[in-house]
Image (tube, rainbow, N blue to C red):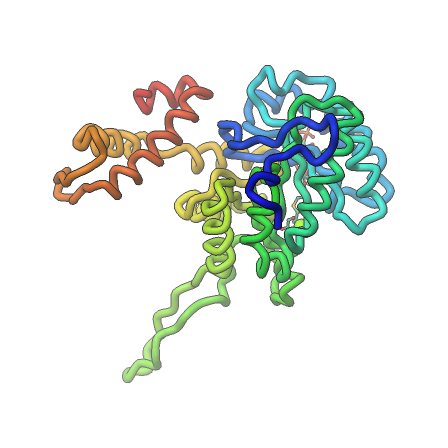
Length: 349
Ligand SMILES: CCC(=O)SCCNC(=O)CCNC(=O)[C@H](O)C(C)(C)COP(=O)(O)OP(=O)(O)OC[C@H]1O[C@@H](n2cnc3c(N)ncnc32)[C@H](O)[C@@H]1OP(=O)(O)O
Ligand SMILES: O=CC(=O)O
Ligand SMILES: [Mg+2]
């Protein structure tokens, strides 16, 4: 483990100093683009203003024989649009550390995209050692190519070993921006018997005891992801980075997608991945607090201007703790309002 003083030192001579705080950014949806497809890449300038983050995906879902084309397509796409000017984050998901494409992904993207890249998403992170390696590798490349700001790292939590080490991963480097739950790879790693990409499963439930009258027994579906989610959210919150829900594969089931995203939002996540254009609006709706919640939160803040004491609002007790809860909502609303004039008006912020 690094010493307290060493933690924020650049890891290479000439590399930019590590960030002490996360940049303030709204990241309700991380929109995945397959950059090897000319047709989809051509749509990026049109999609960019509608999302918070555009991600060029180089890993799973990109065929092996299109990996070089995806990397080249991402570099072209990254330089063709001024994402920073639009207030849109530019991310890429690289291939995993032991893959034949990893080295070229990292070296060519740092050289070809440079300071335009905000975050590198690293799949299948098993422990802090993977982040330490990326930290050093990026520092050397940043120094060589004269980057002015450090590239941040986002880990996907998608192996059993990664879940076991999630706290250490979250705190492994000042580059850490956040962690996403990767339910597809995680299911495989854990030997879960499902082919779904996230969401619920109708067979994962509790059932009441047999009824004396032999009538049908009440059963309730449970959340198969809750344990991992809660563990990930706590690890991220404790280390001051952001948790995210990952992919929801049933593109044809927007209602279930909305519910999965909402569970993540309520538990503390900042956003989720959108795999298809139809999921962008779902994420925007869910990860922007309800104006009625913001209005009530504002009343709590006004009722206790210095954040202490006790108050009653509509029959509900408020005190220092609910003041903090209200501040979380209002701060989130304020960040979104700065980006979205319609929501600014709805929130009165
Ligand atoms: C499971 C674990 C993971 O790793 S998840 C992350 C990896 N997977 C991905 O990144 C998948 C990204 N999404 C896609 O490739 C496509 O959306 C998939 C799922 C294949 C569906 O595509 P398709 O059958 O073309 O859908 P569609 O006909 O309904 O498309 C309508 C129009 O929208 C376009 N589109 C589709 N997806 C995107 C996207 N991600 N970004 C931008 N545009 C997209 C389609 O090209 C289509 O356009 P047009 O109307 O034909 O001009
Ligand atoms: O990469 C995401 C996953 O679910 O696997
Ligand atoms: Mg995965």
